[in-house]
Amino acid sequence: KAGVTQTPRYLIKTRGQQVTLSCSPISGHRSVSWYQQTPGQGLQFLFEYFSETQRNKGNFPGRFSGRQFSNSRSEMNVSTLELGDSALYLCASSHGQGAAYEQYFGPGTRLTVT
Amino acid sequence: AQKVTQAQTEISVVEKEDVTLDCVYETRDTTYYLFWYKQPPSGELVFLIRRNSFDEQNEISGRYSWNFQKSTSSFNFTITASQVVDSAVYFCALSEETTDSWGKLQFGAGTQVVVTP
Image (cartoon, rainbow over all chains, first blue to last red; front, side, top):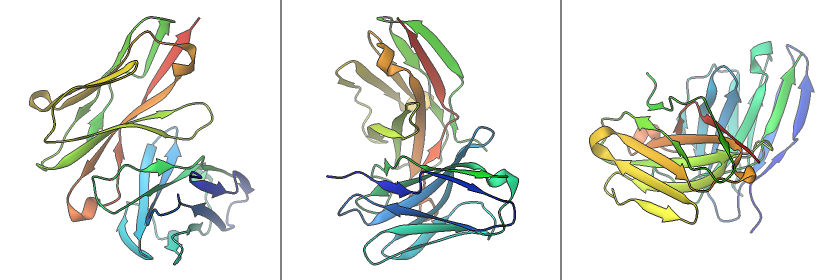
């Protein structure tokens, strides 16, 4: 089975621009979660989608949004980029929704905001 | 408040030594799950193990072993006979059963393990 894939792997944007990151979960997985990883804050939960609905959201400003499609693929969007948005964005998928399911992570998208 | 604490920032060992990573968690839930993930330099988080709050049986998988103790809220991880390929950052994570925690892993700060030949 193919793992979680994320595109693009690397991205350089300018402050004020917007960006869209894409995630394809493992086949059969219906839940997709997004995380931001920075040296200062570590790994932080952004949001989780299940059956095209956002079920949970972390403590991030409204500039961070996402969506999930009927094939479980997910995108996250960051508008009006700030320098502090530079981070590794990780997507994870799991077979079901709930605390019991282990999450499998993709390789991440490294976003640099200049 | 930090729910998962990994007090060790970095551990350096020589190959074949054992290394133990500490993890202390905090939750009010009676049902929760604990995880360990490995992040090699490539950046991808690799799932290692999941434990639920009702199963305190320790586990051994190859060179890896885990010690879960609810009485001390700890879920420690030991690598026996370490190898250079074990060099990575290791994260402990907590997942709670409450509705507002669905799909949310709460990670510790991670412990960098450096294994030298």
